[in-house]
Image (cartoon, rainbow, N blue to C red; front, side):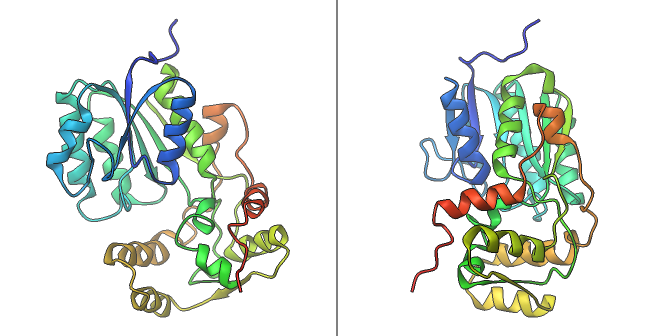
Length: 281
């Protein structure tokens, strides 16, 4: 039985310069797969805000890794996913792998569009990323020595984006992942205080967790000049998703890859070794 897609098949990685996308693209290229990056800076370019840019990037493509920026919970995301799926069908795309989010009803609505597409599909439904603290919205807080968030003692089983990328690549290149929903988490639920403690141990300096009221946090983000979609997203995540609904561990990484997920402490140690958290005078 054939268990792999052809390496001659062109794979479009939407968001191919982002946290998971660039890792997926790198892994596929290392395997000898033909890859097209879907981003505003690529040629042809892909821009979620310009539907007229999508057809050119889908031309000749057989597999698509879909990441929606900034998040599938954003208003308008289902319409965009529906339009993309329709164009993918017209372009004779064979397989879709969608990166989704846990505990977001809007994201699950987007998943349903992919499930009902008539194409081969796999859903990778992820918890919050470890790399948010080294490549994302919270790295400056770590550098400042205080992770200031309205998180209380709620726990989240943060997942490593390298695990997400490994699962996505398996789904793009191996047939037995068709029709699977992989809900991926790390191996332990962690509060933000736990995160700060692990980063403190990895860096050798004290990183505090400062719990702040939600409205104060949103005001500070707004005052920082962050884009309005980022403000909306952080407001949504901390008011809706980080309420304990996602504290449960899942076996998605184990089911997809046959190995356990990476622990946050290992991620923190490796990230610290890159000096990404080295404070400058």
